[in-house]
Structures are given as C-alpha cells and as structure tokens.
Image (cartoon, rainbow, N blue to C red; front, side, top):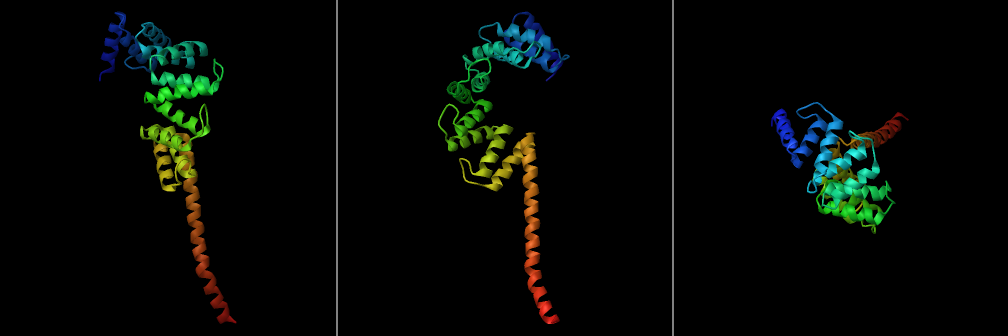
Length: 241
C-alpha cells in the first residue's frame, strides 16, 4: 500500500465530510503515515469524525486523545464521556477502558461490579484486553466470586490471540498451578512466547528461571561427583592404612 496516496485520498474524502476518512486521516497524522506526525491535527480530525453519530471508532479515538493527552490537554472526564459513547455502541476496547475507569476509580466512583460488567461486555466483543482483564477479575474476585479455572481459561483465550500480557499470565498459572495443574514445561513455553512478543516481565522471569535451572543442573552434577568420589575416597583411605 502506498501510504502517501492513501493519505491524499483520506484528505480529499475528509474535506467532503466522510467520517471514516476523517478518522483515518487522524490516524495518519497521529502516527506519521504519508505525512509528518502532527498530534493537534490528529485530534482535530478525530474530533470531526466523532461528531458523526454513527462513527464509533472516531469517538473511541477521541476518548484516547483526552485520556493520553494526544493533541490536547489530558482530561479524564472528557475521555470517559467519549469512551462511554463508544462503549454504548458496542465498541469492545471502549468497554474495556470504561471497565478500567470503574475498577480504578478514575473520574467516577470505584465500582467493581460495573468494572466486571464492562470487562464482560468487552470480552464478548472479543477484545483481548477485555478477555484478559475478565480473567484477572475471576482470579482476584473483582466484582464477582473467585473462580481460578475461569481465570485460566480466559487468560489462555487471550494468550492464543497473541496478547503478550495474557501469555505471561498463562505462564504464571502453569508455574504456580493456578486454575490448572503445575506444568513447568508449559510455563517456560508461554514465558518464551510472551518474551518473544516483547513483554518485559516475561523476559525477566525467563532469565531468572533459566538461571535457576542451570544452577540446579550444576548442583546435580556436583552431587553425582560426590556420590562417586566418596566411596572411592573411602576405598583409597582403607588401602592407604
């Protein structure tokens, strides 16, 4: 795909009030696709896109701008308001974000049941973030009763969708026997997948486990050496005296 041509097409369509093109033009300005990065212009076009009632992705993008201060000052209240508009129109990642707001008590009063509810909606919409967080809720009893088996199943589902944090969570479950039987080989496999996808905690854990495994191997080798050395040494002493 020629990103320069794509940018030109999005720009022309945006000037004709095409809401999806306005959203993609915002993406181009935010990430520098076919043009220079310009966060204020990204915000401007997301805002135009979001002004169309039917454009859910524009509303989500605008919420993201307000939350992270992209092209505009950070404003959690405005972020929540735009996220909820997208969430109420079944945008799965927006539902995940609303779940976070309720779980952490950002802008709204902390409400674990509502957090669980929105994570559930997000998971139904196949958001990897929502699926993973729903697993976290079941593991820790956030807005629901603890169910470690469900937690593991949800982590595994998100992990199979190549979400690095979920892959790490699956590895922890296998290592500690949480919601499943202990399986060191599987734990190492999932830590490696997570690490390969760049998740820092997995990289550190994999290094630590590799060090421990190497140390155990050395200790076993020393044990074998002592096992054979001692009888021989005793025989030697007996012959000597």
